Image (cartoon, rainbow, N blue to C red; front, side, top):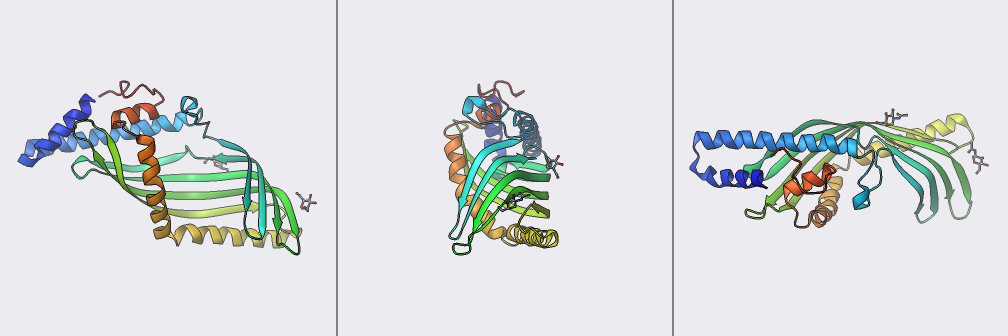
Length: 248
Ligand SMILES: *[C@@H]1O[C@H](CO)[C@@H](O)[C@H](O)[C@H]1NC(C)=O
Ligand SMILES: *[C@@H]1O[C@H](CO)[C@@H](O)[C@H](O)[C@H]1NC(C)=O
């Protein structure tokens, strides 16, 4: 809290435009950035255990028992779903600009993948049934983002104003068994899936960005409630006691 108060005081004085203030601001911004990077690094490790005190299960890997998807003419059931790689991302860059209340970042996931068993009913009349194992990976997944926020001057409370995120996938690997009993045709069908997912992600960047902004912004603000930045960093770090563990 003291740390944030100081930051805000400096931001307040930035109007003077003195070189000293500019330098202090620059240092302050570097120090906030490295605090956030440290928190994310701690988060990657904590993701293996989750945050049971907040009802968040282990996320690396994330194991889901049973999911069903229903479309007009197709039903799918998925069992033994294992999602790997959620915590294996590299922080390519992360910069904060307190003066502009903006944070920009770039993360890269080498492989984000899911393994599952599936059962599918396709087509209402011909009733095609398929089942087998499935593996799907998004490789070299790049997330480029910018978050604009506002910070309460006295409370230090954070509110997200907007989120801009660009997602690009380098390569998609699909290995769904038993789409066809003919091996060559099965490979072909997987190639169709790979191309479809690649295009869906890489050619709909505006749509994805819009969706994330409208969906994630209110959810994040709900989660944040009236917590300060220091509280949030403390919670992510696994302490949950609100920032006292930070070396502010
Ligand atoms: C799945 O992702 C994990 C984490 O990134 C990686 O270690 C593993 O090699 C991937 N599995 C395959 C089969 O690519
Ligand atoms: C492929 O699907 C058929 C029809 O549902 C099923 O009988 C067979 O066991 C499946 N094969 C594999 C390898 O899962």
